[in-house]
Amino acid sequence: MKTECSKPLLAMALLVTATAVLGSAGAVYADEAEPTASQIVDKVQDFYAGVDDYKAAFVQTTAHKMFSGRLERGYGTLMFKKGGLMRWEYERPDIKYFIYDGSFLWIYEPEVPQAFKGAADTERLRRALAFLTGEGKIKDVYKVKKVKAERYGFTEGFVLKLKPKQKNSPFKHVELYVNKKDYHVVRSVVVDHDGNRNRLDFSNVKTNNGLAAGLFEFTPPKGVPVIEGPAQ
Image (cartoon, rainbow, N blue to C red):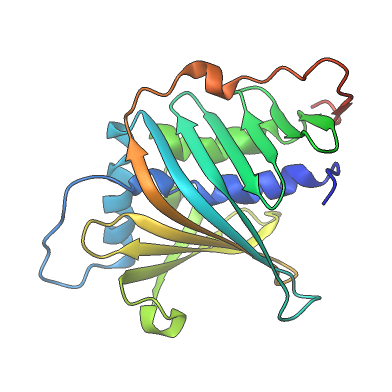
């Protein structure tokens, strides 16, 4: 699939997914009572302050409403670092990179080859990444509801449905799948207003490994054309 100027919307879906990804490491809670949605969010949110960087393998599954039964899958590695930095490396079926350096979103596909540099969505990106630094609060941005996990075929824990409070949000809701033993997020699904679903499953999570800042920088290779998005 070729890079298009609409790709920042996909990156935003990845970032919305990341609002709770850093909850993938921490202490085990042993509450006897079934926690409420608010309590689950608070426990996941608590992880952010103690996580400086995060790395995990991911499997992305995209289901388009127009093509019922057709699934697109991507495999790769994601990384986040405090200071609002992110890097998604797709390894298959196509090699591509989504890199946010704190100011610009870069999308690079070596096989095309071309690079996209976007600035128009920077403020949205910053708001989404605020959760990763502990500055943002999930309940400030979303209305949170706990739904029956068995309805979603998830037996490992809890399922939360997050609806954006912002009226013009490009997303209808976000589903977070939370492990009941330690409250880490093992799966996230972003659903847009057309019914398209962007699912991410995380594994092999590693935190606080001192990821180098250089991983979140990008310089287009010589000769690669750069398509710039509209300025803010």
